[in-house]
Structure formats: C-alpha cells, structure tokens
Amino acid sequence: TSQPDKMDAFWMPFSANRQFKKKPRLLASAKGMFYRSVDGREILDGTGGLWCCNAGHGRDRITAAVSQQIETMDFAPTFQMGHPLPFLLAERLAAIAPDPLKHVFYTNSGSESVDTALKIALAYHRVRGEGQRTRIIGREKGYHGVGFGGISVGGLPNNRKFFGPLLPGVDHMRHTLDIARNGFSKGLPEHGIELAEDLERIALLHDPSTIAAVIVEPISGSAGVVLPPKGYLERLRELCTKHGILLIFDEVITGFGRVGKAFAAQRFGVTPDLITCAKGLTNGSVPMGAVFASNAIHDTFMNGPEGAIELFHGYTYSGHPLACAAALATLDVYAEENLFEKAIELGDYWEQKIHELRGLPNVIDIRNFGLIGAIELSSRPGAVGARAYDVFTTCFHDKDLLIRVTGDVIALSPPLILEKNHIDRIFGILAEAIRETA
Ligand code: PMP
Image (tube, rainbow, N blue to C red; front, side):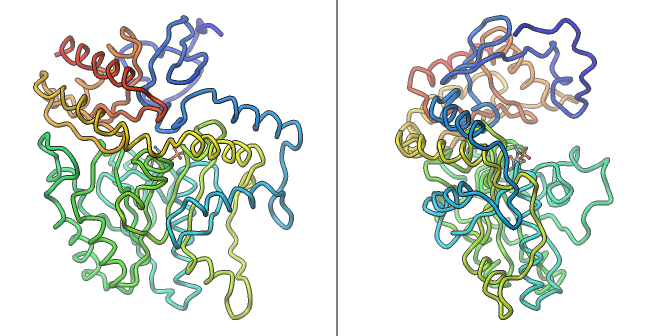
C-alpha cells in the first residue's frame, strides 16, 4: 500500500485529522509494538492503536482464529437461534469479570455498550415496579462514546453542542479534573473525594428515588486522563447503594489489563452493577463491545414471576462469529502471557520514567496508573491543545512515535507486551519533542 495522491474525497469532519498541521500519515501494517507507515518507516506504538491493542499488533493466534472462523461460518443470526461461540465466550468473560457481574451482553463498540447499559438500567427499574427511576447522572467532561445515550450522559461540550436536544432527565456531577491534578505526586490523588458528594447534591435536588443510574469512567481518558481521587469511587458506590441507584463503570479504556487487573473495578476494589467494555476485548482486531451485568440485574429479567421478560434490544452483529473468535483467542493470549499482570510489574519503571519528564518546558502535571500515562502541558494562550499537537506532530512525523493528544494532555497507553527498552524510547522521544517544540 502506498499513500494515495488525492485524499480530499474522504470526508472526515469529525476526525482529529484536520487539527493536525500535516497531511495524515497513513499506516500500512502492524506487528508487535510497531506500525509501519506507507512510506516504510517503523513507528513505535505508544497508544495501543487507540487504547485497543493490549496484546500488541498482528498476534498470530488471533489472526488464525479469525481466518478459520470466516471460512467455517461468516455470520449467524442470534435471535431465536445462535451458534456456540457467544456462549463459550460468555463463560470465559464471566470467569474474569468481578463478582457478581457474571452475565454479558454483546455489542459492536464502546458507544453501543454505553447505550445498552443505560437501557438495561432503565428497564431494570421499570421491571421491578420502580418506573419513576428515569434520571441518569453522568459527569462534566465524561466521555461515553458518540451515541445519543453516550453524548447525553457525557460532558465534553464539543461532542454535545450541535446535537441537542439530547436525552431528558440527565444531570452531570462535577468532574474531579480541576481539583485532582496530581501536582506531580505519584499514585491516586489525595484530594477530591468530596466531589463524590455532588451525587448526593443532585440526588437530593431531584429526589433520589427518581434516579436510575450513575455512569463514570473509573479513569477518564478523553477528559485528559484523570485518576479517581482516593476513596472517590468507594464513596460513589456507597451513595448509589444507599439510594438504590445503579452504578455503571465505563471501562472501555480501562478494561482488559490496562491497570493490572482485568477491570479497574477489581484494581480499585469497587464493584459497580454494570460494566461497559470494548476495545481490548478483541485486542482491537474485530469490532466488539460488551456489557457485564450483575446477577441481580440478570435475574430480574430472566427469573421474573412470568419467566424471562422480553427485553427488546440487540444488534444484528451481537455475538458475531468473527468477533467472538477474535475475543476467545485474545483472552487466550492475555492469559498465557500474563499480560494483565504486566501493567503492575512494569508499573514502577513506567512511573519512574514518566516522572523524569518533570521540569521540561510547559509540563504542568504528570499522571500515571498501571500502563496509562499522561503529561499535561500548559495551554498556549487562546489555543487549547496547540502545544500538545505540536508534540504529537513532532513525535509522529519526525520521530516515529505514536502518541495520543486530548486537550493539553499527551496520553499514553502502550500495548502491555512492551519491554523496558520501549519505555526508554517512548520517554526519550517525548522529552526531545517537548523540548524542541517549546
Ligand atoms: N467510553 C469510553 C470511556 C471511551 O473511551 C470510548 C472510546 N474511546 C467509548 C466509550 C466509545 O467507544 P467506541 O469508540 O468504540 O464507540
């Protein structure tokens, strides 16, 4: 594959490409920790594609499973019939999901997982005779994909402002971003637990018995990689339990080992009622998402007095054979190579190296957890994100390192297969780029 001469006909107004100063540089192939661009250069992947490829690229086992599956059976509907793979996969997923979230519903993306979780939450209350619970609470700066459910509960202004009116009955708690900057300290922020009380404020404002669910990312990605203050998620859990509100963790980026356990819920020791995931489920190979639901939620629909309740929700491609085959092979790779533990084993070295960037020009905060990293730069006056884009451009175009930019934050989420030498290279290149673009 080579770079096409004309690239204007492909209309991508919502993609970030136009924000970059240079023509997009196209990627042609990928293996392990590296992409290869159409101009033949090897690019170190500091972002796991887009928080997806936790086992690195081009894993033979996944390739073989998907190839074999497409030859055996390309597609099968899952209404009224089905095929074995979704069942086999559900067993495997239940084994790694936190107790008691032992039931799984398949989608095709993170956005669909979010919509599905919101619908399950609303239906759950209705089936239990609590139909007045219709309100949903998200957070300012939250990101939950781009479906109407996700943008309604999400709180990034640019994702919402052209699309209203959105879902009614949604409120947003304050995010922890502004007061939970780490100030270069390591580990979870010491300050900010009091922001969990914003849930109490909103609950009391409306009457807690009208609230169906609260949705948060345990670690927010798009808001600029924000770690939960110590005790914050625990307090949200307490308040939800107290008021009979379901707690949804959106683990689209934290799922599948990024923080050292299968899910952040396990790493933080806080159990939600629903978990959304996607990305790492298939190592990014075939689109797939999933929602984990607690046994109580599952039983409410399945073991009602009149038997299973017909909850009409599902996608043509829910439990797609190729996606299931990819996910099963992905889980094999994660398990055989103990990749979830890698995020803890390498975590100290990652932390040490990322903090060596302290003191570089414009660097105002550094955050890390598991194999997630964030370097926050000060805003250039009137141009949020401009500095970080300059760093991106230098890294990607001149120094062959792929990073991600969100606002003024450089976000890192490398494949969990990385070694110390890759960590050295990532931060070596970043340090150069930050200096050169200052
Ligand atoms: N939720 C979160 C927390 C995400 O980070 C993302 C995507 N980055 C999504 C949902 C949406 O996932 P998708 O793009 O697969 O729809």
